[in-house]
Length: 294
Length: 294
Image (cartoon, rainbow over the protein chains, first blue to last red):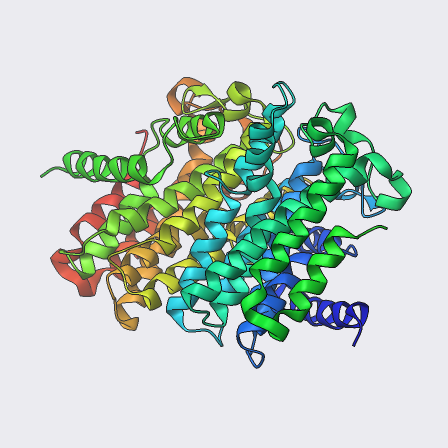
């Protein structure tokens, strides 16, 4: 099986689960469920669920219901995109090649759709029928911390907003990205592993892998914003420079940033050594992250 | 002990727990923690935590750590107020006699502060040390459903926004309020009871109590919006009429609405009969809800 075939098959599994777990458009009040589904099924690459599935199946290839846990990550990711795109935040009109949520449903509904997806993520974890309660509660805790203010996704978003008015230093850059994208990517790997009952040594190795690919992901994201057009990206290109964001190319330059992404990829590989062949798809995902849109 | 003394003592317990559970203003990034705390410690009456404490202590007067579970309800309630007040939603400048969150911190930070409080609510439930994992996971599920779109708080908010353009009927009114305020008030009672290990019969009786006071609360809220000044309310008065909201006085008239609030209070009392003296404070809270601001 090629990586494309693997990613497509896992993506279908995740999409089917998301369809099942998200209220239908016919449920009252329909407009909020339409708004949630508009962004949830907008052609996202499902990187976070893919990571959770691959990490979980590296521990227990026969795990049942793992795709439901993986959905919680996509729900959080999608809520964060809807809120980030709002006029008061990044004010973006285009996402994955389509008008952003507030452009279609209005700002009020976009705010509430984000709130709803965030809330649904925790409902989905609480209702995981194939997972013992003590593991489920750990998943809730991990996801809340990774999405929160203290070292988590929202904290990174706030640093990012504030960073527009600060001197770009390597320390600030690392703090922003460890939190903004890194925390949820690391959490994706950990959620899959915890769901499948990983021991602490395996969990530590997978967390290290998650941290390295999290950093690689953000470096590549920053580079793509400079090197690609809006059409290629499916979102507005060049916004980081326009908004004076603190990015890897801004701090280190383009050539050095490419080198750093490759170094993070190599470090991610090293974290997986003890798993041998079981970590095959985790390596492939890391590769795909660093080489995406090439 | 008078009800005022009881409410003040329980309020202090809740405030102390909220202080402990919410990241300090000194934690990075400080601005988001300032924004969260600004609205969280704005003099709210802590009705939802009070209900959780009284319901839990009706089942087990010696329950340990119950105030931490009660805080999750105030975190959800506060997030919903911050987002409701945003310009895209109710566009309110005044809340509890002070400028609303977005007036002080800006819209971007207000949106993120709401998201953070919502996320923290689930973190707090996941981290309840004095409660077994199977009960904790049930608390997470109950809170997520009560706060969500399908019969929960966000669903009610959406109906409310849409209701501005619909014919006010008793059916629509009931659907809006069962969801918008009713679901979280009912959930407050249930969370306390579940935390303390209530059996299903007790839980059903307490849920019925919660539904009746939820309805009473909303009827009184609608009446206060008409009958009191902005100074008395600590928020902008007369907004329901100005925004063509579907309210109890709009559908039933003022006199009949007062009667309905009294009838819900009587029904709440009846739901508590089996508990005898143990439900003393639940009765007092119901009274205080119906007779507030008198």
